[in-house]
Every structure is written in structure tokens, then in C-alpha cells.
Length: 125
Image 1 (cartoon, rainbow, N blue to C red):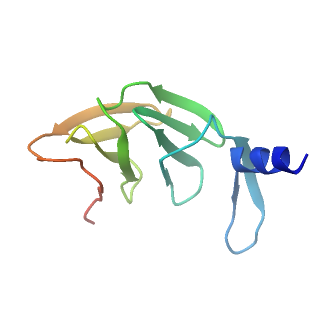
Image 2: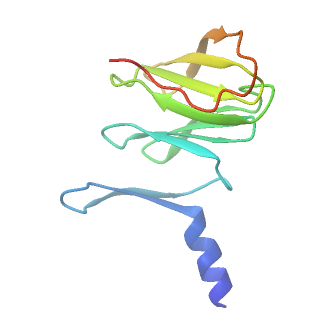
């Protein structure tokens, strides 16, 4: 029925070139998401839902962490050069991750001292 079509549409993610509208790839999301970061070239997408974080390259999952934080992830951002990822969460931590060539995330640093949830993260150029 109509509800089924809408549900399926919400589960699909299509990456297209902005100027040409040419579809690069499409894949099914592993469920609802809370936040996302997409690389400049559209190849690498990082998604978070609760404490779970996943990385996809060209629509294929390359990394999954079931406990990237001890509470829900509020925000995540990739650096301009796409080699680093920052996450902020309800556990009062900001974390910095290195993204390797295979799309794996390696936690580099946990930034402590926040008195409440870290709702937004960014990199300074």
C-alpha cells in the first residue's frame, strides 16, 4: 500500500552529483539515523544512531562500532581533508577518530571535561 512505499523510500539513500544529477550510487540504510556526515566527493558516509556508528564507502559498509560512545551520539563531522572524524555525544565526551584508507575508524582521543552533552562538533580549517 501507500504506507509501504513511503517506508521504503525513507530507508533508501541516493548519492548524486549536484550539478549533473547523475546518480553515483544508492543503498538501503540500516535503520533510522540521528546524524550523518558525507565526504566532499560523496564516496564516504558516516552515520550514527544512538551509540552505533557506521562508515560506508560507495554504499558498502566498511566499519561499525556498536559502542562508539557510552550514550547517544549527537553530532559527527569529517575534517576538510576527510582524514579525521569528530563525534559528540550525550556521555559528555567529544572524540576524534582517524579514518584510514579502508574506511576504518581508529579512535585517537577522547576530550573530557564537558559538563553536559556535546551537541555539536566541527574542525577549524
